[in-house]
Amino acid sequence: MEETKLFLITYFAALLGVVPPGLVNMTVAKTCVERGKKNGLYVAVGAAIVVLFQALVAVMLAKYIFTHPFVQNILLRAALVIFILLGVYFFSKAKRGGIAKHSKKPQSNSIYKGMLVAVLNVFPIPYFVAIAGAMNVGVGLEYDWSRVISFALAGSLGTFTSLYLYVLFFVNIEKKTESFAKYSNYFMAFLMLVLIIITVIRIYNL
Image 1: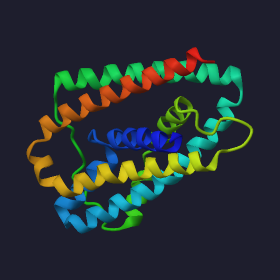
Image 2: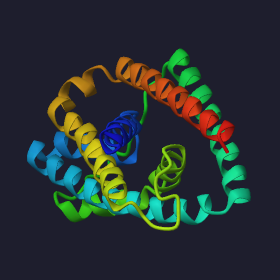
Image 3: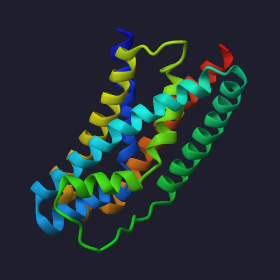
């Protein structure tokens, strides 16, 4: 039951984390436009593979951080501040509107290109560290590998699902970029609110 709850929360956190236009999803959408859905799907698969390892690295970092009470206390508060700032940022961005711009440079049609782009996008690691800490993953003397694997798979599958939606709907996304960006930012603001609540509970229970 705990693994299922962890999987679902992490899955949706990863899915919504990739929804706002950014380096990886815009690479997927651009590849679809220029070279077809199949190649866009390859890029999505490559990115999801890298995210799997990024999530595992995040759990390893979380274990070190959150087995030291003082560091855990500081990092949870830092994560709370980050989530609040991100929540305000996404909410204000949604209220302002605006269209995300992306490079017109052609992308490669391979899984390796997707992996390369995902490696360059290092933001998921601190993002997953904060989520792992909030969800109490990787804490204790020994790893609970069922929770660790559930966490990593959820992060990877959530990312792939979001990117796959870009592949399926890239034509509509291109036509409705402004409204898409607006509502995706509202989704992210809501996600930050959920993570803020979880983090406050974790701080209170220290």
